[in-house]
Image 1: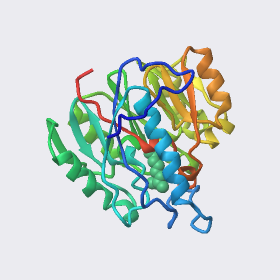
Image 2 (image 1 turned 30 degrees about the vertical axis):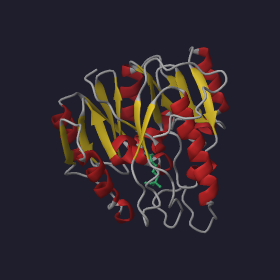
Image 3 (image 1 turned 180 degrees about the horizontal axis):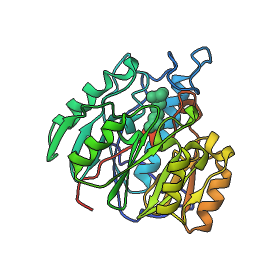
Image 4 (image 1 turned 120 degrees about the vertical axis):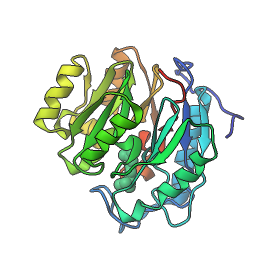
Amino acid sequence: MSHMNAEMPAGSAPAAFPRRYLMCRPTYFDVTYSINPWMDPSRPTSTEAGLGQWKKLHDLFVGLGHDVQLVEPVPGLPDMVFAANGAVVVDNKVLVARFRHAQRVDEARAYLDWFGRGGWSEVRQAEHINEGEGDFLYVGGEILAGTGFRSDLRAHDEVREFFDRPVVSLTLVDPRWYHLDTALAVLGEGEVMYYPAAFSRQSQATLAERFPDAILAGEADARVFGLNALSDGRNVVLPQQAAGLAAQLRERGYIPVGVGLTEMLKAGGSVKCCTLELRAEES
Ligand code: ARG
């Protein structure tokens, strides 16, 4: 944890309430395999540039007043920087991920160990394929759950039972938006933004009914992972290329804070993917 030298970025404001985040330094970051359409192992990556970009994101969260904890990166697990996939944490209960692809399966061990150090009312690993907050997003007392590419539909029932919270299943249909958090972001109590074309017709109808006032993203913003954003209820941290969404957010009274995470984008991830929210108290 580093609380030193953190400054509030110009134009931002103190968080609506401070959050607790878990992140993982991209010490071993690389694109050595391809498990989503953005990953091209023949394209060079720079671990050094990745480290610099990640540190800016980390320091930004600290500067906004959030408590950022770190899980130790493991050699040979180049996607571990995407901490959002490690677990779902709601009401101080932890359901650790079970990854779909062999290349990421061993990440779960690191999260089991980290959460195993204590402080949680319950910690266990999911039985069904479950990619953590990549596919499970808490909004206003419920959990929105993605399926289609990664998390198994049976994991949605498991999450409902484990957390004893309503779960709304949503089906993703375009492999470029393979995790729910690449196509939808929670902004505040009951408020979201999403890219409709990433969802099945039925899921589009579900979203339209539940969130009639949602911000709808266009394809250009969705392509630069503008929806892979993280809101603290006031500041919305998102890729700086997502200019359209930034303007829409400003109109709604949010403060968009753009960051450059071009290295992570090569692996198909951005702001939200790098950040797991630790929801301790019942809300
Ligand atoms: N390369 C990683 C994968 O395909 C990226 C994960 C992005 N994480 C996320 N929460 N969407 O698994």
